[in-house]
Length: 458
RNA sequence: GGCGCGAUAGCAAAGCGGUUAUGCCACGGAUUGCAAAUCCGUUGAGCCCGGUUCGACUCCGGGUCGCGCCUCCA
Image 1 (cartoon, rainbow, N blue to C red):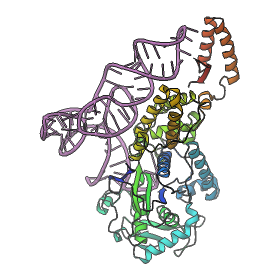
Image 2: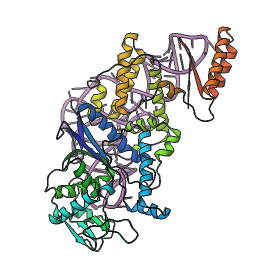
Image 3: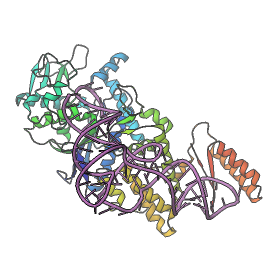
Image 4: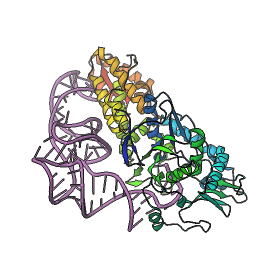
């Protein structure tokens, strides 16, 4: 079976057929960089990074772009509060974002376009939209006239009437129609801005994605991803801008949206304040734990992020690493995982829970394997885990890594030597004493055929 | 008000119109000086009410509850 993806636009699972199989094009909405990101912001990154890995396995070349929004009112507010230039705020948090995403084993996208480096492209697109009768200038603003587009609202499945009926915002006086949205807005003195045919100003939020996609990936791309809260208005407006600027030619063939990360059943969001930053979670949990936890639910469903989930995920990873530790001397050989149930699960609209279940089956098979089967089974497990972006560390390092204040490896080894001496003398009382002492410090001893191993337990 | 999503065992979470999901936890057994790890096994499920069907957790209808979008948001 080939790759199937759920397309938000058709609201159906569809077979994936790229426009150009020699170069698949994917774009995912990145962050607005004005503070540290929370774990909910990390979900689309991990999800589409995983899809990126799957696509790379299936196609010779995949061009994956994930933008950075570095001009925005929230960035301006932070800059003003700190008395610095917006560039200082945005470059600082873009760097922090890069750091957090790398800690979650996300690959670098092929392209990371920045909004402020595409102002000309945005102005050009805005001009084209005005010329084609889809936009108008008013009081220093340029607005997109949604009524000029027949299919407006199709992605988010809503009609203009319905939207306006439920509108909770006042309509700006310069809008000809309440649903029109801003392509370009004026900047006051002291606010960041760029010269344009409509005066000094800055782009509206939706415009950058349309302009950057056109510039770097072309008029029509294969996959566009993001959180489901972007369906409306962001992605709806992107479609409007791009399709209308390109005389109705298709913009995106497959729209994909991930569900939310919840805390206590409620959406985590910066505005609600109930968020957990990736940075603070990384203090307690390895990036692989966060990543596997995010992949433990199907990407389209909402998931609750709890300490229990993370602890359970940590236990699972310990299990995988324990299986690998037992075969650490066995070399990895090249294997083809495309025919495995694991890879089939990923090809079925990125069914990561199913894939993880297959990972458990692989680990179990490895644990039970005869010596002559181990190399192949180990190689399969590692190749599969690579596809999910986990099990990237050495088992030894994973299982023995300690934090500050933990008993040192040297001290543990010394006690093990003493205990082995006691064992040879059958001094079981002393043996158990040492075991208990280490256990109290979170260290578990495992007596095996080839001597005593140890690992740390949370 | 409009549009949409979900409800699966103690917890997490999939597939599937009929045959064990899986993981964590719990319990039993093998193994071990004792453990750990591992293996084998057990308990335990599908919100409610109808309908379709030989048969429904799975399809259809109606409820109930929870969540989301319609405003910045991954």
